[in-house]
Image 1 (cartoon, one colour):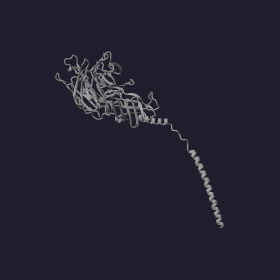
Image 2 (tube, helix red, strand yellow):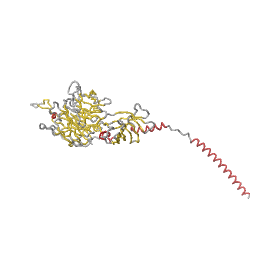
Image 3 (spheres, helix red, strand yellow):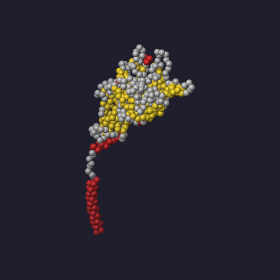
Image 4 (cartoon, helix red, strand yellow):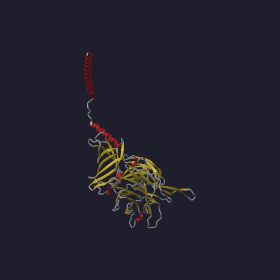
Length: 519
């Protein structure tokens, strides 16, 4: 019994001890947890919204500009005006637009995150048109730069003068462009890759007949040629002496070949000017750049032309010319008068019919034709003398923004050149002549040169990388057949081709206008 009582007492004491220890341990654990919670629960940080916004904006800027600069293209364009809504996404004057977002500070910005927008509009869009056809305008415009910035407290909505847009993701921008009056163009942009640019042809160009041009004023007469995207037509101008009739002056003849219906339309303008003609389009109006005058025709050849004179400041033949905005740049072509030597590049302001000297080239040029792409003027080949024998292989590049003139070279020297642009490419056609020295009765050279060959030439200059590539073609020249003028339209090259032939009095020789696909 005594043993059982002790045992009972022992277990009772043990139980009380365990309970007491457990209680003490619980108190210690709770105290430790409280102390630990005090250590592990710091004060809640307040998020700075301006920092978050700045980080988001920086991410968007870097994506827009690819860290430096990035070119975007228009993939969709919807015009809305008082006449309705028009999908103009496939217009030639929409496809040629480029928007370059540049990551740099532009004066006048209102935030820390901003950039520069360079818009390369290509050809003008008529936003108050009543039909899609009326939106098409042949009017090549120069690039312009402005700023872009964020709207209010947004990291996705941005603005630029006349243009508001939203950054969706790295592949998509949506925006609205303000047009004339109340018109707007809603656009979608995507990044433009190297593959999106027109590529230099790698295959042989295969020319085939497009139409014939009846004229006795092609060979040796320096006709001009251009194409219109808006009217889908090819135009040729020359001084057609055989159409003088009873008039006292030889007529300037402008011919239109409609590529849709195949119709050939002529308009004659009787004016005493030289034979050399260059042909361009400004704001859907034809501009004939002659030796003494610049004449303006409507592209339908329905109304009488208007004429403006150089007022005796210059007299030209075998000159080149190119247009941008409302300005015509006239290259070389001096007739040896005292007022211009022949190395000049003149600017004709078509809005007020005034002529001024723009710059000078390192050498005199005759038969050297020109083209504008973006903010630069390119002059190809030619000779130093009027109808000279020693051809040049130079490419003069004049920068309208900086006023600098640089020089590149072509692989071949070309006596007469002709040009046409296709987005970033300049197609250069031309004539390469070969001469021999006539001999006297004893077989000694007498210094008189005779032309024995007049080979056609075609090449392409890529303005993106300043590389010139000569093109292979199926053109033949067994009897001095060659290129006499050229234009580029809708991704096709059109050339006025052939050689002088004898025709009966009162008849006209039929010249070939050949066409080849560039793509």
